[in-house]
Image 1 (cartoon, one colour):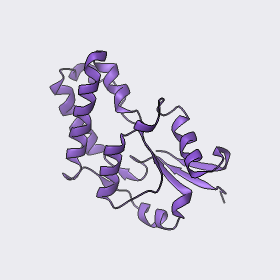
Image 2 (tube, rainbow, N blue to C red):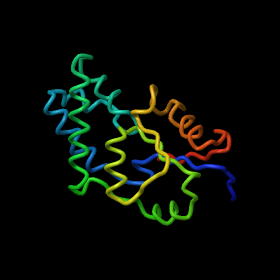
Image 3 (tube, rainbow, N blue to C red):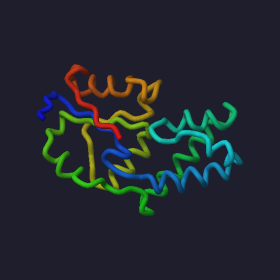
Length: 161
């Protein structure tokens, strides 16, 4: 089967890299620090911006500080075996023109850059939680990436885990 596209839009965690062990370590520690361990066990983490997760668990007044804390924990964990490049990723991305693919992630820019830098991926275009008002599964992040690449969204293929 051939798929024709003018641009490729990649989720990061679970698609290009795996950070599952880091996410588990950091969020478990965070939940204990904020006393929300029980409620935390019922919250969906994967694929959602941290601000949404934190807002589900804490009063609004605590969200900014708690959000900064989880971001710090996750960024600090990257050098501690916090991220791994998934098989085939490097060869695939190296075969693509740099101006025809983007990373579209629910992570903050700081965290996404730390994880991607750790595995040597430097995308020319990246859309993060910092760039949008509505996170995935809302199409806003993908529409923004297509616009930044100068491509009609109908001419893009999205890679998600």
